[in-house]
Image (cartoon, rainbow, N blue to C red):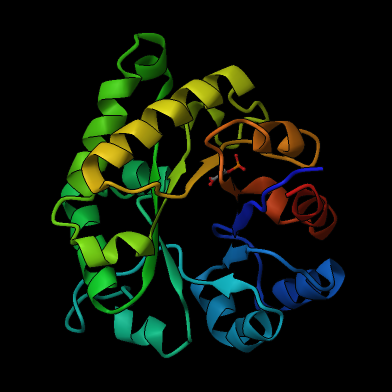
Length: 243
Ligand code: PEP
């Protein structure tokens, strides 16, 4: 009943061992359309072939922008390339807040990833105070301006944005369809101004199998980035079905 196909992306965060990931894929069954999963590194490495076989786009939740070196605990782009990943998640609000990831670092990561031929899903979003005070427009514009600085015209097709209001992530209460429509209209305009293109724009924040159809029918929503509901194959499958 929908005349367009939406991107359904799952962010597994620090969940899903290799064994759990394999069980998930078996329960999920065949998928068509644009499905993406961002697993933790270990599961990503072991199950890369399983994702590929099923036509699921897969990539890491984070990476370092340097090619190699003395950066204990980090993973580089050549390591990720070896796994056949297409798309990399960048700038998730949990990385920004728990690991103090700045827009400057995010910009470097995006430039490095694009140079290596990857595509990027950039997460942006305002906090509750910024939403309530009406500052959200400025906050979101600044994030886009800083994170996408230096973006060359030939790399624009490799960019996707996930709008994730921090106050709706993991809370069980998504933004309303009115808020999503208004914000996506604004972001599409800013993105068009910055890139001259219609950049794919996903919504994230408590998307589940019950609200996905309504959110997906908001103008300007090109897909979903899903945390909690991406861990349950039945829920994830239902979301894919309405997308
Ligand atoms: C996320 O963190 O990307 C997310 C959208 O989480 P949840 O779906 O659990 O709100």
